[in-house]
Image (cartoon, rainbow, N blue to C red; front, side, top):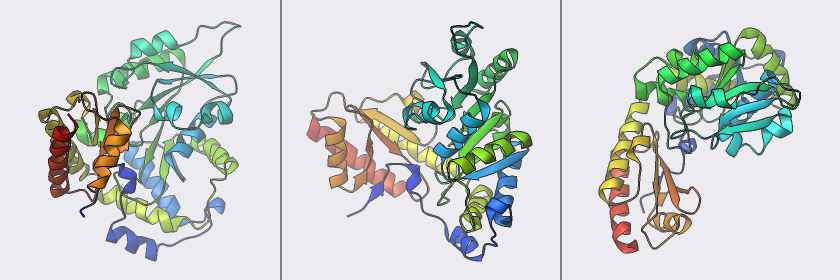
Length: 345
C-alpha cells in the first residue's frame, strides 16, 4: 500500500549529500567551542538572516524558550498570538522557565497587527507586569502556514522601538515565508531582534534549530542553553547536515507550496470546508463539518488507505507537504479525499 505521510514536515529524511557530510564531518567538543562544523553552521545561519551570531539548539521549542529566558526577567509579560506555538505547544515553558506570563492576542489568521499589540502593551503601573517581549510566529502553524506581511512587520518593529520592547520571531518555517513572498529571508528577519528557525522541517536536516541575534545576546542565550542541558559535544555530525540543508534545500520549498495549493484547491472543489486564504505555504487545514465523522475518526480512515494526517481537535485536520512528497502522492491523496467525501456524507 502506498504511504503518504502528511502529518508534518518533521518527518523528512536527510538527503544523500547530508548523510555524506555527516560521515565526513570534522568535530570537536562544542561546549568548549571546539567543533568547527557547529561553528560553521552557526555563522552560516546568522549570515543568511543578517544577524551577528547564531546558536545551535536541539529543537525549535528549546530555541524559543532560551530566547525568552535571555530577553526577559521574572514577572515580565510576553505578548504572543492566541494559538502560537510558544503558547500552545511548549508545555507552559514561558511560565516555568522564564517566570513570565503570557498576554495572548487574537490574530487574523494567526497574524497580530501592530494596533492589536499596542492595545496589549502594559502601561507603567505598580499593579501590572512589564511587557518584556513581543513574540511573532512566522509562518503560523495553527492558522495554516500564514505569513506576516512585510508592512505589518515594519509597523510592529516601529511600535516595539517606541516602547523599547524586544521582538522575537518564532521562525520555525521562516524560509517558507521568504519563498512564498518572494523575498530574501533577511527582509523578514530584520524586523526582529532574534529569530529561531528550524533546519529539521522543510529543510530536511535530521536535528536542530538555530537562534540568531546580536553577539552579546547570543552569548547570554548560550548560558541558558547550557542550563537546560542543551550543551552538546561532538555535535558537528548533525550540524553538517544543517549546513547542506541551508545551502541546498531552501529553493525547493516552492515545490511544497505548489503541492499544498493543489491539495487545498482540490479539497475546496470536493466540498470540504477550507479557507483557501490560509494556504500560503506548505500547510493545509480543513474541517470535517458536514461529514458524518469527527476529525480523529476521519484521520483514521485516511490512515487505513495509507495517508497519514493529524487531527487538529475534534473538527479540523492538518496536512503538511514537504521534501519526499511528490505530485503523484498528492494526486493519490486527492483521489482518496474525494472518495471519502462521498462515503462520509
